[in-house]
Length: 182
Image (spheres, rainbow, N blue to C red):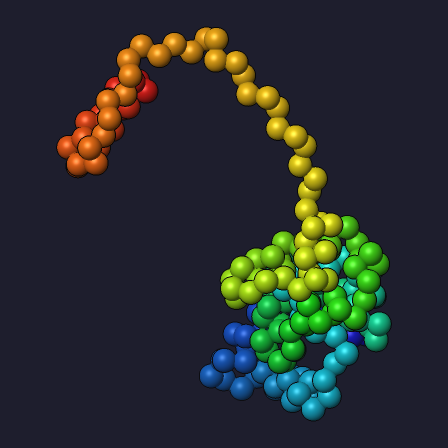
């Protein structure tokens, strides 16, 4: 039943507009009551900023969680559902520390690697050992770059004059590059 209720919450009207409405309605009373209940009894699941695959939902939330909340197409609605009933956000780094990354789906490992790398960059910190291993494992393996083409077809007809760093010199070179590009 909770799975169906969460799907209706995601597909229906944005619950934030119901809560901030000036008029008292049955919907507002229902949402307010739901918010109070969820504050009193914390659910076993949490909001995830990353979409999760169904097998990952079962692995991360063994107590059960509405899978509709974690589908990629429902991410915007899930943020609304997080705000209204007061769902907590999952700490992905802590969840990763509690399980083996090999158990996660390839899609989630890839998303999680990018997310953790961006998070570390934003916060100005280094990745932990577990995070760096996940980022390294989820990074696409780059092939060796092809050898550059030979320069046989390129002719240099005029040497570029040295720049003295003045604005006039820079503008002159800019204009020469524009003309050459045409």
